[in-house]
Every structure is written in C-alpha cells, then in structure tokens.
Image (cartoon, rainbow, N blue to C red; front, side, top):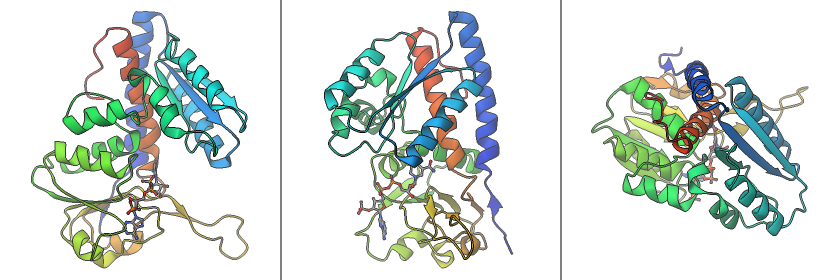
Length: 298
Ligand code: NDP
C-alpha cells in the first residue's frame, strides 16, 4: 500500500509552462519578437534526437522561437565553434543548448566554453557554475533547478533539514547540493566511494538520487516521512514478449513509497521539470537581453 504523497512533476511542469507561455506572450508584445532557443544536435544518437525534438516542440507550444541545427556526426570542432559564434551574435537567439553527449573527437568542455555565458541556458559554462558556487545570479542547470522547485513547493522552508544528494556530476549532483545549501539545508554529497551509503541516506529528511542505477536506493534506506526526489532514468531489460523494458528511477519506488512522506515517480516526476526549466531559463535570458526585469515567481 502506498503511503507517500506522490509529487506530480508533470502537473507542476504543466502549470509552470503555462506561466512561461503568458510571460513569453507579454515579452513578444513588448519587443516585437519571441524569445528564441537554438538547439544544436551533432550526430544521430536516437535518445538525443528525441530530446531535441521534444525541446523544439515545447518551445513552440510556449510561444518561443525554436532554431534547430542538426549537424553530421563527422562535423569538425572548428565548424561547430563557428556555428556557436554565429548564434552568440544572433539577436534572435536568447538561449543556446548543445545536446550532450557529443560524438567522440569533439571536446565538450571547449564547445561549452565557447557559448556566451549570457545565452548558456543549460547552466553548464564554468562562469555559470562559478556564479552558483559563490551565490551570484546566473543560469542554473535545468534538472537540479527543477528538483529544488519541487522540494520548495512540497516542503516550503528547507532550513535545517538534512539533505543527502547521491551523485556528484556537474550536471545534477553538484549543482543540486549548491541549491540545497543556498536553501539552508545541511547537505551531504554521496558518490561511488561513499561508505555505508544506506546509513548515510537513513539520516536524510530529503533524498535526491542522481546515480543512473536502476532501483539502487531501497525502501529500508529511507527515513520515515522523508521527501524523495528520484532523478534517475533507467530502462530495465524487456519483459517477455515486450519490445522495450520499463523505465525506472534510481529508487525502488514501491518499497520507498511505503516509508517516505513524499516521492517523485519515474516517469512523471523530475523528467517533465527539466524541459519546463529550460523554457524558464530561455525566457529569463530573453528578458536580460531586452533589458527587461525577469518575470517574478518563475
Ligand atoms: P553521472 O553518471 O554523470 O553521475 C552519476 C553519479 O552517481 C556519480 O557521481 C557516481 O559517483 C555516482 N554513483 C555511481 N554508482 C554509485 C553507487 N553505487 N553508489 C553511490 N553513487 C554512485 O550521471 P548524471 O548525474 O548525469 O545522471 C544521473 C541519473 O540521472 C541518470 O540516470 C540520468 O539518466 C538521470 N538524469 C535525468 C535527467 C532528467 O531530466 N530527469 C537529467 C539528467 C540526468 P562517482 O562520481 O564516484 O563516479
């Protein structure tokens, strides 16, 4: 029997997208142009193609302009850098996103470093990572920003709560920990070398799992009443007769839901927040570029 409240990221993201759409319409009325996001895809990775398509559709649905650049897998670094330079200087483009991973042979760090920090709506540029680290305003990576929005909506004030983030990637784990520190939580970052991970997680009022291992966090690791945010997206092997396996998170949902106070499902939890926050960051970039204040409450 499920006892935890299910945190409906899909509904939260839909409401956020509606507010972003209204703000985008008001931006267009003031400036005579729509906020614009350029998405660059190099190569034909099937998952990346799906993500890029979804981002373009979400942009259009929110009243934003979407500029897709699909390049061949053998595109040279010089050609990609020159496209980014062009997008940096294009006044119609407010946000630039280069879909990762890039094909082997392209230096991801060099490519991200070439994006103007003011258009880096993914928040991966070292300037934006640095701004987050020192508490300055900048672009924050979309997935952890989506997670902190869900947490604040669920819990209100996070002051003094014990938070454990499992995973220390630059894209999720580290920025997540920074955002929790900013919200006055007491934060532990766990990773593959952490000893007694289950015991560490048992201390947590807030658990954020961003590992990439199917159902690794078990129900008996969760402190009763804790809030669990599951970032993981893992596909299980297909069951008999099925073409594709089920999608599951990093948390054993059925077990954890019997102990936790609230929990995000997979799918339908953190996933939908990521694209909604990308639109939010693009809108904020557009407002900055037009010298307008960013809309409040987004
Ligand atoms: P990375 O592979 O970059 O990082 C994984 C982290 O998990 C590392 O810090 C690693 O530790 C840690 N880890 C690995 N094994 C263990 C273990 N046994 N015990 C404890 N920690 C462990 O992944 P990402 O951060 O990019 O993504 C994490 C997950 O989130 C993936 O499932 C990904 O698909 C999903 N994701 C979902 C998004 C969404 O929109 N919902 C967006 C982005 C990611 P170490 O550093 O020591 O190697």
